[in-house]
Structure formats: C-alpha cells, structure tokens
Image (cartoon, rainbow, N blue to C red):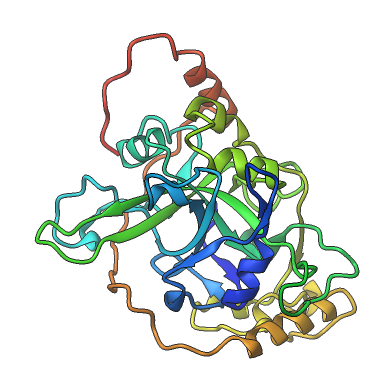
Length: 333
C-alpha cells in the first residue's frame, strides 16, 4: 500500500524536475495550476494535498493531450457521483486503489474509463514493516545519481529524481454549489521481490518518461493499453528511517534520514544520506513557508474493504481479455 509520502521540493524546482518532451519533441516544463496551494512536506498523509501531473486537456478541451500541467490535489478520491454535501461522509478508504479492482469498483471505474489518469509525485514513500517489537518504517525511492545536485534557474534539472506513481483523479462538485474539489488515489500492485519483506503491496510506479507519457495521454492511449503499464517495479531502493516519521506532525528532513537499525531513536547523518539531507534542507530553505492551504478541510471516517484473492496481474489480464464481451454490471465500492 502507500499511506505516507514525502515531497519536499519547492514549487519551481518541482516544475523543473518534471521537464518532458511534448509530441513535437520540444523540451518543456509543465505549468502550475493553483501553485499557491502547494506545500512541500517530508511527511504527507491521506487527506493532505499533494502535487500531481495530468494532461492539460482535462482542463482545456482544445489543448494538446500530450501537454502536462502540475496541480495540487487532495489525497483520497471523492467520486464525482457522490451525492452527500460533505466528502467526509464517504464511508470507505480511497487513498489507495488496488489495480485488480480499479476496473470494477464504481469509485474508480468511471473516472478511469474517462481517462482521468494522473501521476502522483514524491521524493519517495514510507512503508512500515511489521516486527515482533512493533513496526519499522522504511523510505523507498528511485535510485539516485551520485552527482545529483540542485541547479539554478532554467538549467537542466540534475537534482533528486522524483518517484512517479500512477494515480486516478476525479472532480467533485458540492450538491449545493461551491468550489470544485479535485482528489486522487494511488494505484497499488503486488510488491516486487525486493520490498515484499516490508509489505505485500506497493504503489504502481511509472519508470521513465515514456511510461509517464502513455499514462497521461488519454486521448492517444486508451484505457486497455494504459493499464498494461500497471506493474511492480524492481528499480527502487530503500533504507530504514526513525519512528520519528510515525507522527505526521513531524515535518523535517530527519523523517527521511537513514538510520542504523540498532539505534532507532537517534537520527544521525551517515555517509549514505548526507547528500540527500543536504539538498533536501536546501530545497526546504528556498521554499517559502505557508499556512494551511485553502482547500476545504475534510476529516473522513474510513472502513477497509476486504482484499481479493487474485493477483493484480491475473485480474488485469482477465479484464483485457473481455474487451469484446458485453460490459459487466456496475457494482458499488
């Protein structure tokens, strides 16, 4: 699963770190939508907001679907069809979406078939390993270049490589009118071999710009092709971190600092994480501190749904094989 992330880059650097080539081969940076709402954090949980990439065509019908925009959305999908006057009344957990049920559960199916695919951005995510004496947190992220450094201005980004997770988003309008609420869920898959000892689920990670392009460009890549990208990846690394991160109010670089498992209570800068802590601190210092963002504050009460027995790959393959058959009946989440 994925229940906690870090995304500490300042807004301008986040934009530079998401540079891409459009359909014409031109190097571009995604434009921000509602940039003022973005808040960097080393400790993001469900119901907080976070940055996602999506196709500009979702916001502008005549736009090139290969163009990307950055947008701050709330974590925990609220379906557009939800009729209550407050999304906190949604009585199930939508922070994660299992890949093997995303095409059957009504919470996600409609949005997914309409092409509402996004990429959730993070430095990495946290996962907790169950142990006899409690739970040990780990920070999981893409392998980083040894010469990674934070460049200035419009230079090519050579800093931290962001983790790019496949997500689904939707837009909910209060029945009585008011501001539209954009929300997202992170798709999860069976954990890859290297991290399965930590947890049996992991986010669906899109490794490389071609995978990101196919996932975002809903006008060119249909759903049945896009879902083939949803697979576990082995291209990740991890290290144990202090239980300091357990408290979501803790929001400092120490959350991501590597520790020695024999000294959990003390966070030290080791040779393996000095570089990471250095640029993270610099990034945080360059980002203006903000108060709570302007999105409405909702506190959801969740109940967990049982996990299906089939694997993600089994169910996706079964769904892809039924494209020529009549559509199945809708089922509520």
